[in-house]
Image (cartoon, rainbow, N blue to C red; front, side, top):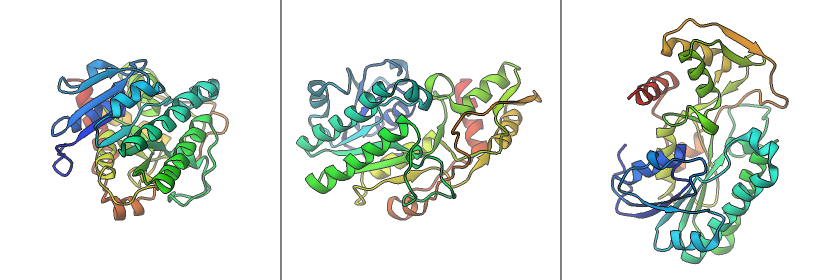
Length: 309
């Protein structure tokens, strides 16, 4: 991926050993000086290229964070608890990892006047009544994960308005791609791919009519690079494709791409599951210049090719 419009900078990626963070660090390392701060509790050193500086530590530790941010131009804050179910089981841990740590990042960045691009989430919307979802839609998160991402956005706005710190929250929709098919990042695409490759039935929760906007990690990286230089600060932007697909349709697409006619089985759905989700990209297109480049089928093909090499 080209980073011609963003080069020669010193940057920090928190959570850089994880799924999205490692793709971001790899793209940035081509033309920039990259530091990664990660405790590798879930991320992997093997995800990172050799030409990044790795600081092994906890983003909640102020001394470590201050040292990591010193002298950098932009912080890409990706470190977080990423599992909604885990956030429901461990709300205090979620608050520390996604709430306290995020405020630490903003506060350390403020003291060094360093821009922060913050990984937020479409989970801030909760269960929307209408799609596509614009950034001005009601924010009614229904999980600790969503609460903390929304709290992070409010702190971003506060630090911009009160201290003049450049912050840009990005509301990621359902991100998928290489390194994101297993573990806590997997989601429904990872589950379907693993099941299809193992010859197991694809398990669809509920009736499968629920819809999601699946965005490839390369497009998410592109949005981060645009956010690193935009003048539109202190406000969130959606990062998706602007197209949704039902889980039933996703199952058929995965079967087709993997090349299997394995059965699809329906299992009971989750309580409070979101019925529909699709990003309105109007503001991201106009103010960031963001345009998604990988439709779902192509993105799945690219992902499977990368996983097999």
